[in-house]
Amino acid sequence: MSEPRTDRSIEELAGAGPQVSRSRLPRRAVLRGAGTLVALPWLEAMASAGAPSSSAPSTRRLVYVYAPNGVHVGQWRLPVGEDARDRARTAEPLDELPPLLAPLGEVRRNLLLLRGLTQDKARANGDGPGDHARAAAAYLTGIQPLKTEGQVRLGESADQRAARLIGGRTRVRALALGLEAGRQSGQCDSGYACAYSGHISWQSATTPAAKESDPQRVFDRLFRGGDPGRSAEARERRANERRSVLDFVREESRRLERRLSAADRARVDEYETGLRELERQLSFNGAAHVGDVPDSARPERGRPGFAEQADLMGALIRLAFETDVTRIATLMLGNEGSSRRYPEVGAREGHHALSHHKGDPEKLTQIAAINRLHMEAFARLVIGLERAKDGGGSLLDRSTVVFGSGIADGNRHDHHDLPVAVVAGKETGLRGGRALSYGRNTPLNNLHLALLERLGVEASPLGDSTGVLSLS
Image 1: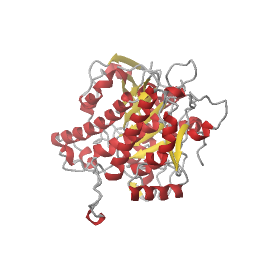
Image 2 (image 1 turned 30 degrees about the vertical axis):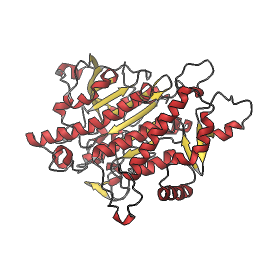
Image 3 (image 1 turned 45 degrees about the vertical axis):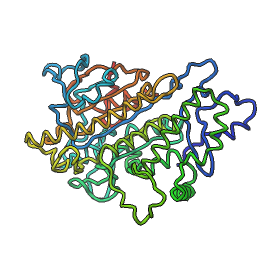
Image 4 (image 1 turned 90 degrees about the vertical axis):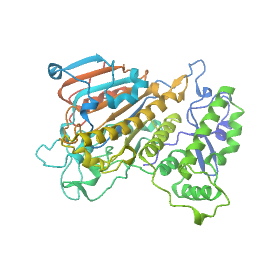
């Protein structure tokens, strides 16, 4: 299904007649040129006459960041008394952060640390082994995946429900991203289809959302627009000429600047500088191009480290929100059961093997180091949203960003008392700086319903939900 066309170029706006004020721009305004489309960030010129310089109240955003293989629970959880675990709900000030969440210190006032949430449909429930596949598959669906060769059966995930009901307000309904590619065929975990382990976002019972792990393709989809065949040709031309996408819209950009205030011109300049830097990283992996070095001398492009990969995806999410290309995103830091190695933190085995630590202190230390690496990437994404301007505030003000896993302790494959951290902006209706604990086996899907409700999505049952989680 094609995305609805809601964007309008500066040239089109110039000829749109008296209904479009010369001093104002619609939120969907874009720059066009040579088959290329570049979205614009929020500008003062997009504000309604007499309205404050902020995004529309409905412009709320939601991101789920998924970490595979569970966490070192001893460094994630704040202690909770046994009596509190049996109560319906308790709330305490978040006066201290567990060691693994220390990177979120800068946004602690926005942080909700949740305990007691369970994804029951990630448990065996008679289906035997395969906890990793079930953990990812059930995380946003709350549905037990079908375990059979060559077939998948699941259901719509929380993010895709939001995409279906409100995603039409943006050019891209939702983004599904990952640092590892997802497989659509074959078996990956004790008879479960690989599609389960590699996807948390599902459009329907049989179709996962197409997850993109190549940041260059994500960039082209979000910011270069146009017909896919034509954009491929444009990509090749730009690569040959070593030109930026902004070079193709230079004339429209100059026309735009004549209409803007000094503050907006500075904002566009800042945005274009960031866009060019991201292009440079995507095109050259951080290396400068030297024209007199022959192509035959160019080495194979090495795979970037985890932090570099995660930060590129985080930058793409931020730019997509900044330009209102989309408002919903998921990011898998690894496929469930991932055996990725992390030499940057001294891990000597793959992640999955280390997660089966059997209490070995050395393996637990390495698991904690991997978890910390994941949380640092999450923190940079959140802090990047906080520092990015959006009207009179920041992108984080109207954003909710969730970090979690479908497994608690990877050694035991626990699916109860899952690690869940929610960072919520001040205009989301959520009050941060608190640790909330819920009764045993409270469905994780109740949290999804609470977050969807704040996006304006009706809180009808989702998977095994039993109601809307209280976050007040």
